Every structure is written in C-alpha cells, then in structure tokens.
Picture 1 (cartoon, one colour):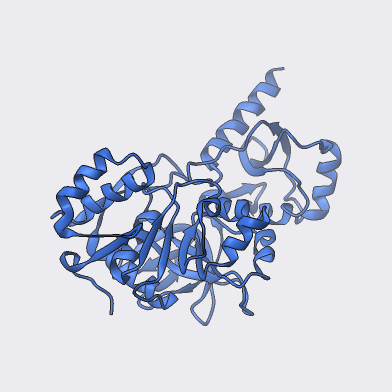
Picture 2 (picture 1 turned 45 degrees about the vertical axis):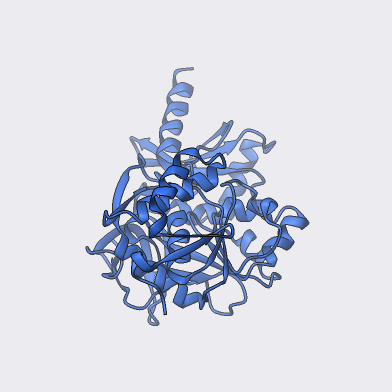
Length: 370
C-alpha cells in the first residue's frame, strides 16, 4: 500500500508534484526560494532524493546541548508506514507541515507525505499555525504550545476542530489542555518517542477515548523496564539498537504504559524521591503563571527542591509555601521559591531543565551573599 522505494516516490507540495527526477530543480530552489518554509522543504527533498542513505536531524536539546544525528532513510520510511497505518491515512489526503524542519517531527511529516501520497500544505513554523490555514486538513502534527495558542481564539479553534487527525508531540499535554479537547470532533494524539526512534513509537488518544491516559506502542515495538524503572525500547524497524531511556515509566498488562517523568528530574531530598514532572502536574491547577520545579545541592537534604515562578504573578510567597503543603504530598514542598522574568525553554518550547537548575543555583548563591 505504501511507497517505500524512494526512486518511485512523489510528493505534492502546495499543488506541485516533485520526485527524484526533479533533484536539480529542487537543489536550485533550496537556495533561491524566498518563502523560508518552502525553501526548507525543498532543501529536505534535495537531501531525501539524493544518493546518500541518511539525512541529518537535530535533537531538541531539552536535556542538554542540541546535537546533529545522521538517520537512515529506510528506517524513516518504516516509521512513516507505522503512523500512516495507525491513522488509516489514504493517498490524496491533505497534510499540514507547520513545524521547524530541523527536527525529526517535522521531517517525518514530509516522509509520511512521500510514503502515503499525501498533499502537503506548508506553513511557517509559528505559535499560531491555524491562522495561516484556510481549511481543515486530514492530518497534521503540532507541539503543545501551538495547540494551546490555537485554542485561545474561536477562529483558530474552529480550524483546529476541522482537522481529522492531529499529533501533539515534543512535550506533555497537561490536563487543562486535555479537557479543552473533549468537545472537539478532531482526533488528537499525544506522541511518545525521540530523535533516536525517528519520531514516535507509541500514541496516546487525547480525546474521544474512555480508557486511561496510556500510551499504546506500535506493532513490532517491545517495551521493558530497566533496574532503575526507566523505559527500555526495542523497535528494530526504526532503531537498530536497544534504547535505555531516561524516562521513568510504568508498563501495564495490556502492553500500554505511562511516563512518570525523567530519571534526570528525580530529586532525592532527605531520602524522599520526588519526580518533578508529577509534582508540576499537581501544582498546575493552582498556579496562574508559568513555573518550573528544579533543585540545588543541599548539605542536609542532599538536594533541595526549588520552585521558579515567572515574575508576573502577584502570589504572596509565604502564603504559597503554606498552601503547597496541602497541594503536594508530605515533604514535597519546595524549600526555596524564586521569582524570575521568564522560565527558560528550548527552541521547541520544552522547559530547559539544565538552564533552570543553573538559574536556581545562581539565585541561591546571590541571596546567600546579600
């Protein structure tokens, strides 16, 4: 059903058909096209239709410095087939590309269009992708920030609702966003994966689904837990090696799983292990500003939990410290709360955990010397 032979693949981009015979023209357009979003697509197609067996992809940098990876085209095709099968996409369906093509999630949108014969619509990578759309599409992929922004205005919300299948990747979808999706006819899915797995290896329905919020792996994906309770992935179709992730997980009898947080984000404070993503979920309904939990070294506790709050909040710090004792489990309340101008985030909108930790240490040292 799907076209796996690159030499026979073709893609319709904004109404124009491209295939391997157009390599020279694509290469020229990748230098001269004035529309930056289209220029990036032409550049990717030049790389895709070339003789090299790999393409270059940049990691998101959410846990460290972004890095370049060479990934196999054949495995990207396998990944695309898994998604197209799951969503039951059909030749001629419309697909919207509205993410930065530096990253695997955007590149895989183009590969899915190549494999399934989708009509690709290309829009700038922006926080409001729906404002550039005149109609609904059969398929698109966005990040949580784009989803949040699109739900804030009725016009963009209606355009979002007119889409059929929407993948939401690159970060967690909180409960508030999930609730807003329940009344929309479009089908939304949270994705689980990373650059090494060539986008996602599991999907979680976000609306129109009665089961708990579990991820369901694709066929051919085998999951286990490491001794540290982190997810171990075997997905030979998309990744040649076994991946031991840093994601603390729980696997259920039906093969589904949930992610509790990253091992890197487990704070051991006085012998109490705190998964900061879990505590952030507990705090989110109560805080009316952007925030992040992190930690600093502590001579007595080992690590001390720190709450960073964006400065536009008018919350009384002492009152907040008292209230958090009722919102969080015992001994989980942050020892320090610091107001900051902006929560550090990566290019893809995720909380930059390394930068938060560094900032918390700077603020602690500054306060200690004053």
